Image (cartoon, rainbow over all chains, first blue to last red; front, side, top):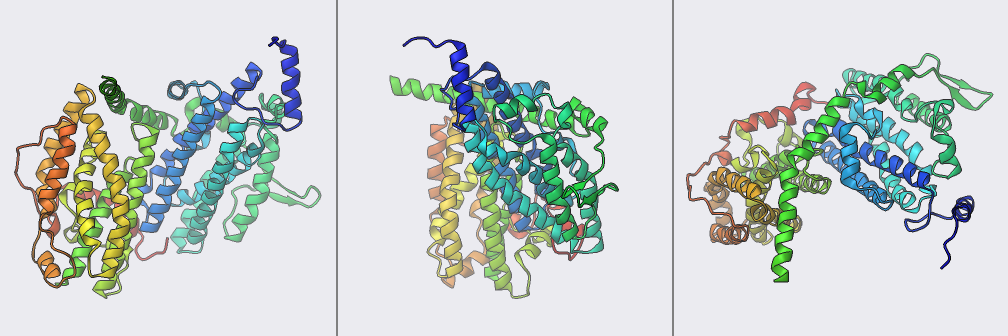
Length: 315
Length: 249
């Protein structure tokens, strides 16, 4: 078969993208497309795995058996999402262990929201409601992402995330309708998680260096600011419904645009947390690194045993 | 004393406390797959605890729910085995604890499915299905770690030596068991210990591990006399219910 020149391959690739035909692992793709996806998918995987920690922090203190079981199941789902996503990254030639080492060395990023502490039970509600809610806004369009394995992984992930969002909102509703201390606990959690949740959509469009190319490749379908607006529009009425106050004095319904206007995000805080200076960045990474180090002897033993067994079978 | 209530609380507390211990692993497992597996086990145990304690509350007839029993008793009223409250230690310690317990639980539930008490039989049937998977999982890891590297062998042998002293309590029986057997509520547990020894020894042999010869018996859990570890488990487990009494969550 004649070798196709790069220009032809490029053209065919972009035609597929333009016609909404999925790119599959064995298809030719530009190096930058591959790199962008590996970066995005592995960061997404890391976010799921690091994201287990803030909620894991309350599993042993969950207030009743049902809440404990639901929280366990939720955190387990996140581990499962991490697994599918690492596998999706592997279809692009990434090595799972290497990408994890990048996380531990600080080269790879993960969602900054998980660098905020969970200091009360209400944070389990706020995380489900706001953080999973924001994640859904980001991820539903990814179900139509141009890369097949990522798009398909997202279909399942989104189903589970929407369940998480509902259970988080249900915790918040219970607290908001509860005793004065419970309501105060819920309001406090909303105060702390509202702005970091808005930051989950990333920098403003003008500052986002990856958005334009990612949209051309249909990895991304909406800009950061569009998604953030969708989130605010969907979430503010939910807060009102349960009688909680969104901590933004500039928040106002705009008849003309049909959207909520909202205040300015503290971008200094955003960039500091991205740089590693958030309240829990160090703890989260240390915890993950320690899990890997403490498990080294287990993984070595499993490999040694598998090898011995293969040898015994062969002889 | 209500023997049936007492018996159900013993079964429920075993599930509750080992489920709690396993949940401490969430986010800290040696590989992601095992993180998921241990969370799964924990979920099964929390489910079993819920079923047994709910039924215990009904049998007692004083209006206590499964949550009242799980969260609002004092340490001396918990009836779990000392084995299940032992700290997680390293992954090998957790696996050995799980293996010793699973091997017992499988044999126990195989008998309890024949209970004349329909609720016990039903909970046992559901739990038995789960326990078979648990035992398969823990046995495979005992073998892998025992027959893996020198380091892993030494670590699990040490864990086995540490935990062995709590295994005689698995077969503890007193007037509670006697009464229920006599009344025909539960079948006789004769032969349970020898069957457990046989099944455990088989796996340990394959894992190249030595059965400890320390036969010192630590008992007390069934009567509410626990190790120092239970108090800390309860401090976390009960924190919300004690800090904010009587609220719905």
